[in-house]
Length: 396
Ligand code: CAA
Image 1 (cartoon, rainbow, N blue to C red):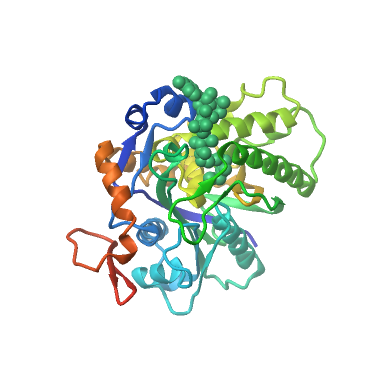
Image 2: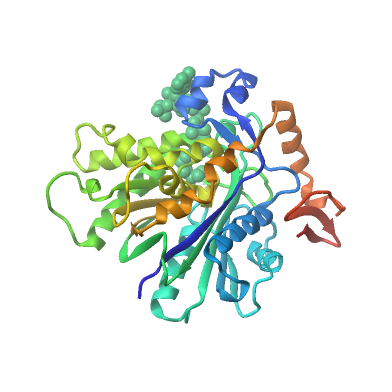
């Protein structure tokens, strides 16, 4: 049985910071953030937004795009590393906000930025095995990436969610069963202790850990695919490569590494062709952890000028700590038109720029959000309103 993506949905905050402006405020040359890291804008969530509200918004878009009803969903998993509770999963709040059926398997997965991929691959096997019995899985990657004001990681923050509707009717991508290569190693490159809202990172070491994991997963994929040999660079078997994007430059480093492993003497020459379109949206949003690679995938389908129908895409997901996977999928007819119709570029254009003092005030306010007494807030859609009796309260 086939399994793959029937639709996808994206949610980003309505506000962002221009990285050139942030650089000036930090006394850094703007070129370092914009060209050196490859990020133009960084999404900043409002205080009424959290991992739950972003996840619910993204899921609603994915469900509407596929005409999927609440009763159609038999599994709901949220992959996140910025959950709102040590016990109750983000997915339970989302189930409530979306009014999904009680006949649904609902849980959360965590492994840094790989958590969503773990859920996606599990859902794929659930569909292929026949256990889904025609039901769909809703996999949501939702995070608020936060390193703190004035840290080296600050320009690599971001916020957003990507929802992936998985079924036996893949209208966007059909994933290739068995063609996955995993790599895991216990490393301390990036983590967030239970007592901290900000991530702790050994920045340059994390880049090396990412590249080591990429190499391991890429080689494991080739073994699993059992298609060694042939002419030219192995990665030319893909029409596009989508890497986990903590910041755009990391994708360039990743691609350079893959092409060097392939024996390519000019490893940068194929970057614009194979990777460029996947970075258009991420460069406007920043790192969204679990959702980053899937935002890059949406960017590829939305922004590529090449006809991709029937072609193979390679995907690399990396979660610090670490676990990584290289896997592949085939683009389905009209997938590009369907994703374009979501108007994702327009969605990003409509956002409002924050001044640096406004952004810093939001960062400070977020410190106390878990203790904020719940109050009615004006506005539309899913909103976090604060806590009452230690319970998080949301407006629908
Ligand atoms: N114009 C153009 N480029 C400039 C420049 C200028 N004026 N000044 C500096 N640069 C370039 C540098 O040459 C460098 O490029 P290369 O990487 O190609 O050498 C780039 O800008 C960055 O400069 P630095 O390395 O000096 O920057 P830094 O020390 O301040 O930190 C960082 C960079 C380590 C990525 C830091 O932002 C960080 O810690 N980020 C968070 C961790 C992270 O994202 N790690 C990625 C791998 S782990 C992962 O992927 C999981 C995850 O999501 C977190």
